[in-house]
Amino acid sequence: MRILYVGDDWVGSNARSLADGFRAAGHDVLVADTTAITLPRRLSPPWVYAKFAGRRAPRTVAAMHDEIDSLAADFAPDMLFGFKSVHLDQRRLLSVPAALRVHYSPDDVANPENVTADYLAHEAEWDLVVTTKRHNVPELSARGARAVTFVSSAYDPAWHRPCARRGGDRFTAGFIGARRPDRTGLLTALGRDYGAALAVYGPGWWREPALRRTGTAVRGPVYGEDFSVAVAGMLANLVLLNSANRDTHTCRSFEIPAAGGLFVGERTDEHARLLDDEEECFLFSSAEELRAILDRCAHRPDRAAEVAEAGHRRITAGANSYADRAREIIAAIG
Image (cartoon, rainbow, N blue to C red; front, side):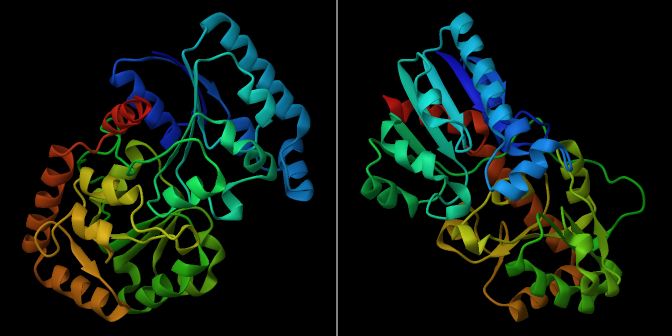
């Protein structure tokens, strides 16, 4: 199939990984990069407009559509694929000539932060809506979506693979992810317990003075191969979910073990199906249980390494790459 892929194309983005997944699955993929819409440069006019108006700058959106229309005219796609393309003009996007129109959302589409009024008004016009949240399937159907399919998150073998440690970093535990209110309390408490033996990577964490005062290594976001290098410096890698998205698994659920890291994550049905607790990962239901796991790992690093290796084998031997997810989406189209 010729797929006109509308999504972000920055290194480390899930959108780029899925586009490459379609290519690896044998399709001809042309990407229209929407990064200027979704992540305008800080303090740029489109960024300021989005902050104050609550929507994307019309000129930037119009320019993006001009590019999409031009690409479509030359490429003649069989499929228009939108990766969380909710900030675009839906009527104009859906008018792009293509036999199939598929929309993919990596986030909870019942969360108002992940949709727009314009997207909701046209959601039923997409031929297929793909979600990574099982609970969204009946909700999307009830909202009038023509067809809905669930696919799990995935890992990108180009970036998520075991790497040698760099420098002197060696932490008992670490977390890689965005600063969120539902994570701040737990990580600050862990910082008081583990201090410099804890590392936290991701956007916004420097704004948490209480966390910084614990001596925790607070660092910026890491993407692409840098993500796997950071994983290599942690004995135990925390997989924390996003309660605003009602997560029961996340992309980290696949990326951490694929990168060779020890998966220490929240206990959910999906996590329990993905990896065997105590053999391929360690699952916890409370802060106290998490501390007990981290203490065990610190005292038995050899056992922690064995569990990490078993988790790596399970994820990489299964059909868990973005190419596998691309094949699932194509199969759902029929």
